[in-house]
Image (tube, rainbow, N blue to C red; front, top):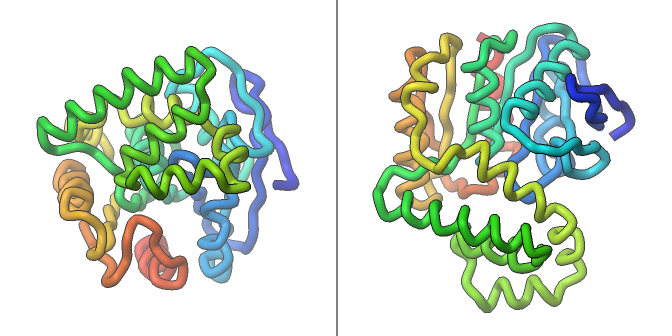
Length: 259
């Protein structure tokens, strides 16, 4: 990231942009930085100005406690203002929840696309999210960053053997560095359920996407988003999982954002 702007509370936000045309801001999910979504910027920058940024508390961006979701919405407002005054948003996973909140808050957003925002639909899933929040909060308060990362990986469905192997890998230190931001994504998800009232207030077109190789509940959550916004559409990508391939996803986004 080679540029910085200041959010309303003074937090420095690292970002970079590529391409020319209408602006699209890419919003990353949990345990990720702008570098995670950067591969998607390359194909989109052929037709748009694409902005990639490190969310607060990650990468080269700063952080200013106490955290609130409203501060992250203000971060997007600052980015949009600095890069043209209006933008489309693309958010992946919990980054999709942030993008949707930003649109509902009245930011100058013309369209929103989200990929597999993991809202829970069943009572079982909601209870699992509540347990995760409780255990994550305790781990972070006690400084057990590694345990916090492990809780998140368990939530994503990784088995203990894979997690144990990850703990021994060189990447683990970087994951622990991002651990405090897990609380931010948990807050953005707002308890985990589909926020139907908030979604119903979004007036711009929303495209909710899922991979057809992802778990059924992910596709159901994506469909629930599309059904909850007044101008929503739902689409699946053949052969894709939660980590969608940029060359498959980019043409779908480009077509939607060109309308």
